[in-house]
Length: 146
Image (tube, rainbow, N blue to C red; front, top):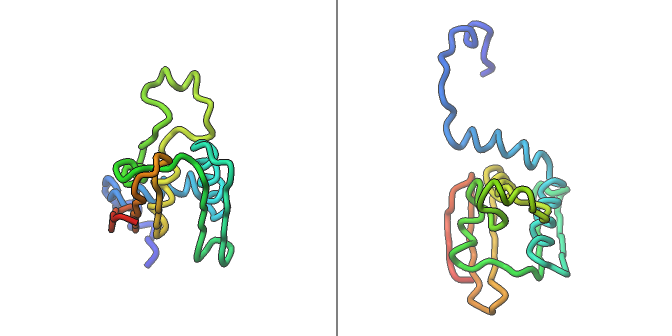
C-alpha cells in the first residue's frame, strides 16, 4: 500500500535495514542488465583475460553469463569478492593516484549480488581446485568445490 502524505509527515527517521540499503546502492552501480555485462567484462579485463564470452537470455532478465580466461580466484577470495568494498586493486587512498584498472571500488559484484541470484565458479591460474559460490539477496548461500 502506498504511503500517504500523513504517513510521511509523521514518520520517524530510521536506519534502513541492510538488505534495503544494499538494494538501493546496487541501483547506483547496476541499474540495468547492460551495466551488469559491462561490470563483469571490466572485471575480466582487469584480471588479464584475453578471451571473454558473454551469454545473455531474455535481455538479461533470466541469465547473464560471463566466462573468461583471466587469472581467476581461489576458494578464499571468491566469496569475499561479493562483499561491499572488497577489492584486490587498492589498499590505501594513496593507491588512487596510480590506479590503472577499470574497476577498483569493490562495489560491482556486491551490487549485482544484492539484486540477483548469482552463481560464480572460478579457480586460480595456478591450476588449483575450482570453487563455486551461490549468493542470493547479497547473502552467501553455498560455497563448495566445483
